[in-house]
Image (cartoon, rainbow, N blue to C red; front, side, top):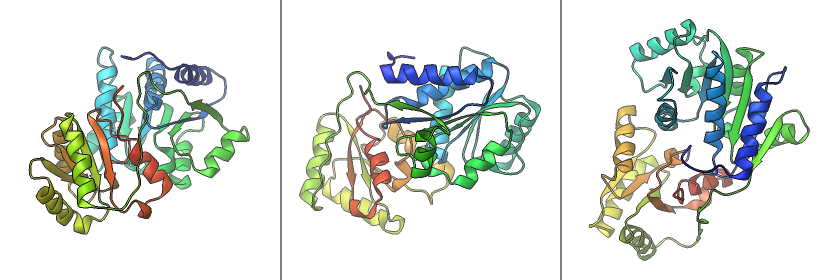
Length: 311
């Protein structure tokens, strides 16, 4: 771990590892602000599970987040003989079949996937841990399906904005809960401004970010008019390099666009809410949300968490 754990993060890790050695299955909720280190808690739990010769599964809401987690987990597990895989709808049938077979035969220790992991053809040889990332994005039916796969499985849920039902279960003692309230060292607070849309405000915000060597997100949540929005911004800021991403694009296109942005091939990503889940690009420190009143509070909170991630 390249950083020092925050006090709350260290306590959450201790809580989880303690639960995993208890005689009854773990059912714990980790609640923490976006970027406060919930994924690190999940990685420690997954490592303990795999080291105990059991399989671990990480369920995430989007294919982009699955790919990013796969890279993150793979880097951390690189020095150990753990076999990792990713399972999403973006893969070919042959690739998916290979992962499904690997899980059933115990050849894969840790799988990271979307709701594709909930389909009937999925069988684990010896599942020990389920991690549900962005738990608020899944329905009750999805979560119960995963739990029924094996009644003795440990379950760890992560969320910055848990739904009332989940919070009620945690507060009433039906589930364990760990709060991560301490910010990572050096983390700058995010300044949020609300105002009417204007070309001047948009141009000033993006120009200021590019001027200090950063990147920016521009969220426009109507796919039909996303191209027009991109053209308008290009006209407004001809010196900037723009990219575009939305959920109706094909998997390889989205991945190419996101990794192009990560590698700084362009300065501004014009996107739908596809970016709201878990993307971690430290150089992006400005976010503009068009028609913010049309979004839910949880969505805005998650979107806001995509920036200011550099310590």
